[in-house]
Amino acid sequence: MKHPQGELTGQTYLLRQSAKVKGLAVVRALPSAAMQRSHV
Image (cartoon, rainbow, N blue to C red; front, side):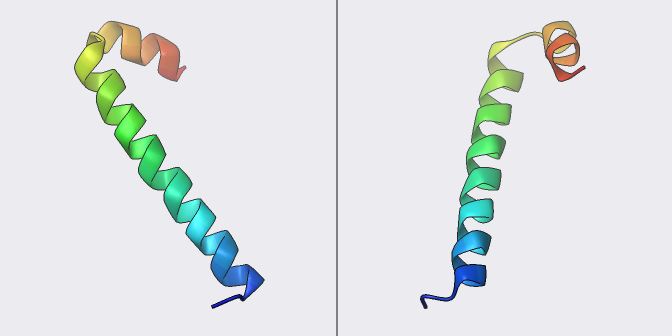
């Protein structure tokens, strides 16, 4: 389980999961207009 590729995949997965959580939090906390502005 110490393959570099596996570690990179795990890090990417964690980054994607955290991005999803943060994205959901932003969507719920801010209005759609603010979300679109920050998205651009």
